[in-house]
Length: 197
Image 1 (cartoon, one colour):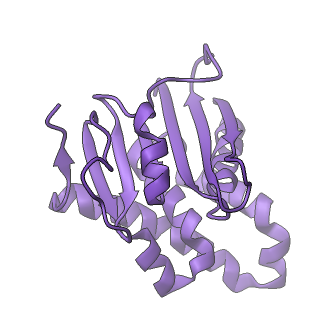
Image 2 (image 1 turned 90 degrees about the vertical axis):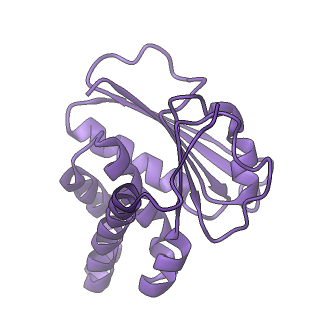
């Protein structure tokens, strides 16, 4: 598997930290090395929040990284904040719910994927938006088995699932939706741009 580095960025309240933490725990449960570092803007709610996640089957050399294998930006401000983590080998993922103007995409990336995660979460439930994103990351990286992510999600939200069993199915469905969004983009090739750099 090697080392997988992910930078996940969004507005405070979009749940990027929860998702990164769940994936780190899932990796640990699988016997993998995992480092998760949260980074909050000035305001924890309303500022841009970035989660840095590394997963590897070998010892991870440094807690921080300069360039990510996958960058996920869930807002326009998050796109700008994550430019520095995108390099020529980076898959840059962003939500298609906001307008992308000149200069919004980083100057370097291997591939840019726009995904309608916000739109899909409205069809299911807006509370699982971040879990749809987790499904997309799992599909792009293969860094942990989906079942491990489901188990970690179960541990994190088990008490809520017990109160409302529909929530469990909704969250598991959200992972599948995120995976399908990536599969459809990569298969169809529409709006997938290769960087000119």
